[in-house]
Image (cartoon, rainbow, N blue to C red; front, side, top):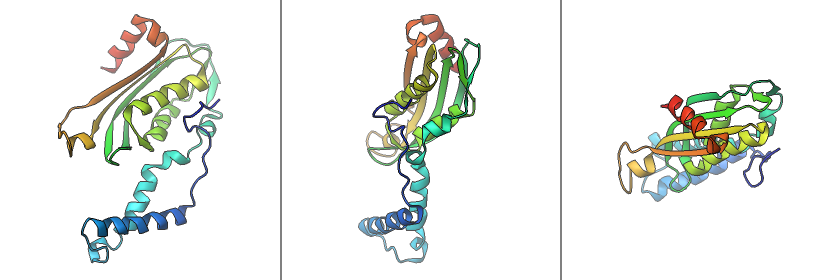
Length: 201
C-alpha cells in the first residue's frame, strides 16, 4: 500500500515532446539572463539538451512504485538480514538544483516476504531522480520498503557529497553527509543495528 504524502502513487507523466519544448524555451531565457547569446553556434542545441537532461534526472516523478513492486514480492521463510550496499546514486538538491551523489546501503529483515534484489537499487534510483534533500530521500526509501514488505526491520544509510556545499556557499570540500533511518528491530535491537553498520563499513 502506498504511503500517504510521499508521492508513491502513480503520477501523470508529462507529454514528452511538449515538456522538452517548454523546458527548452525556459533554458534559452536562462542563457540570455546570465549574459550569454543563445543563438551562438555552441549554444544553439544547449536548451534542448538541457531540457532532455533535466527530464532524465527527474524521471522518478513519472515512476509508479506500486507497479514496479508488483510481481516482485515473494513469500519466503527467511528471517536473516538482507543487505544491498554501495548503491551508487545521483540526485539534485532542491534548494539550488545542484547535484549530490554518493552511496546508499539498504537492509531489511524479512517477515515471511522478500523482494527481488534488483528492486532495491531501482527504488533508490526512483527517489534519487527527483528534486531532493538527502534526509527525505533516506526516509522515503525506508518507509517504502516497510510499507510493501512489512518486515521485522529496515535500515537505510546514505553517504553523499553535495556540490551546493562544495561549489558555493561554505565551499567545504570532500565533506560527505551521512543520514540514516532505522525502523523496527534495527532501531530497537543494538546488536542488529551494529551488525548492519559493521557490514557497510
